[in-house]
Image (cartoon, rainbow, N blue to C red; front, side, top):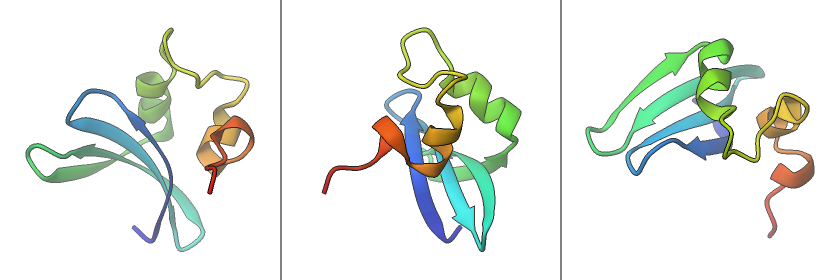
Amino acid sequence: MDNIVNNYPITDHLEVLVCDNDGKRIFVLVNTADAWEEIISEDVAAAMCLTPDSKITHENWEDFCTGRGIFTEDN
């Protein structure tokens, strides 16, 4: 995993990461409490991130995955 592009917290100890791995987009489920991570498919990541209370929608999914638009980090 080279670069974390974005993340979405699922619970206090679970989060979905969008990463750039040498030019290839990958999605990683991370459990910070148990210190493990697992690569997941984009479909699984979308199912976990596209919830009714999320700012992530089908329309801005690509922006979330690339860190653009409302997902641009303020520095």
